[in-house]
Image (cartoon, rainbow, N blue to C red; front, side, top):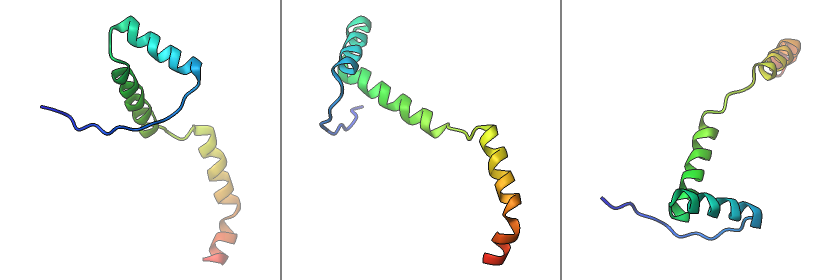
Length: 74
């Protein structure tokens, strides 16, 4: 089964590209495979992001502090 691919162009720092090429060489993968894996990992990480508990504490305190104002504006 073939996968449809779309060409795109981008830019990256020389250090980043060197690191990606080194991983591809070391693991005997195509550069495209390493890049696709990195992109997929990034998307998975972003999808799994959770709000830190300390941020939620501050958010909830702010909501409680401003509850009357929110009711007046509603």
